[in-house]
Length: 268
Image 1 (cartoon, helix red, strand yellow):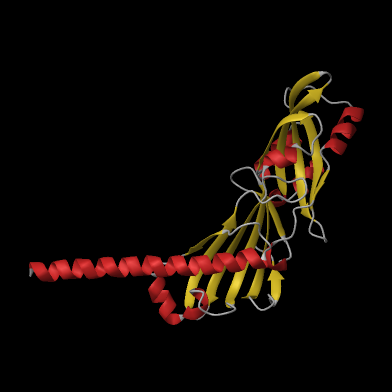
Image 2 (image 1 turned 90 degrees about the vertical axis):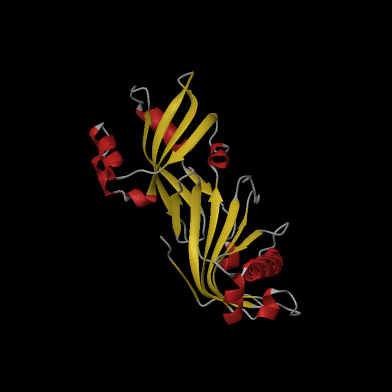
């Protein structure tokens, strides 16, 4: 009986090792493909999700694959990161293990995400020394209106807005400025930040000239670079880390032999 238990334990151990080894080989192949297809400077991080890789490999279908790369500069952006979440990946075993001469994968859909840290945004705001971004809800907007803001702000969708707080010199004194900002993705895939309410956190009122000047300062147009697989960006928001997150979704994705997809759609 003891020998049987030992044999079972050894067999399970060997299967686990085989599973990890096969998954590592597949992840390496996908990583090289993504580096080439996305023109990345180095291999990105790849993770094939699921309890057992070999069980998925037996069917040629993989529940989800995550591809990510941190700090991928473009233009003046330094903290830009790229992430792709691929769902229902379909590929023969030979293509995932790299034995095929030209690996080719297909997926039901993929979500492409580009994030831009608040530090990059701060560098676009003259005279600012600190800057943070936070989400807002309807109550936050209502409080701004009750505190003297334009009543039309209540028509601003909180999902398309953010509270930007920056420390900068105003009236010769370095102090925090709060800006209720509308978030927009332009038709050509740029990020537009439009101030809707600007105020000093200390409570002092701004003059019309000061408000106009600060509104110009915080009106930003940011080129985030292209989303992976030429996905059309549709959603812009502030994530839990206070970074701008631009995303889009593509259906029926093919990686390899000339990438293509059938459509892009919004992803909330």
